[in-house]
Amino acid sequence: MSIALKTPQEIDKMRVAGRLTAEVLDYITPLVRSGITTGELDRLCHDYIVDVQGGIPAPLNYAPPGYQPYPKSICTSVNHQVCHGVPGDRQLRNGDIVNIDVTVIKDAYHGDSSRMFQVGETSVQARRLCELTFECLWLGIVRVKAGAHLGDIGHAIQQQAERAGCSVVREFCGHGIGAKFHEEPQVLHYGRPHTGIRLEAGMVFTIEPMINAGKAAIRTMADGWTIVTKDHSLSAQWEHTILVTETGYEVLTVSEGTRRPPDSIGS
Image (tube, rainbow, N blue to C red; front, side, top):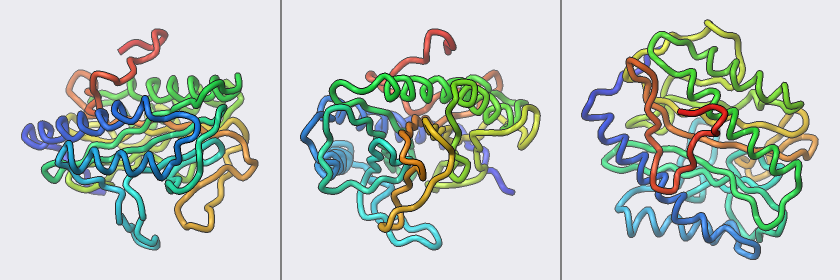
């Protein structure tokens, strides 16, 4: 397994790409409301990335082996959709939860982040799941430092999710990122402490736990991309791009509107 350690020049570029990614999510936040379609959210984000930021939406026409090219510029995963939801004619309704996943390429480097949005008045279960998943994200992030192991991240996330009676999706994980959308290493959101790859300063990867209110089992929809829970239970996800430093971590996908870590975890 070859894991590229980023140079200071590459890290500077990734800070820019990360900030732009976060700013897309800031821009779209007030527009996520009842009645808007996921396709309209996609169009708005696409135009903002291309026309305002001078960037490239990485998902558009992205085609890993075995997949047809992804047809949109963002992913919108609603309610029991776990990830990779393809935007279209679906209108958001009061009570929906939706993950919006954005990846911006700027000067050949990627920033990748996603946030959960709640439309109108959501259920207690939906609110708790969104908060739990945000906590899981940050419990993973604060484990990051040179000398730690990937298993430390996964264990912290898994322990929190399962303690709350929820489950961690196993088939999808975080990933290295840089000049390529997906690089090594794979960052599992479950695991055992002190196992897995030892982290080194200069590594950059995403942490993006997908937590289901019900069972962990998933299936793929007919479009070949959208992943849903098999039991139709709600699913939530949050994501940041993280740089490993000598003393800890740096979150690269930050902006004015980025939500701070939970008070119980700190930064």
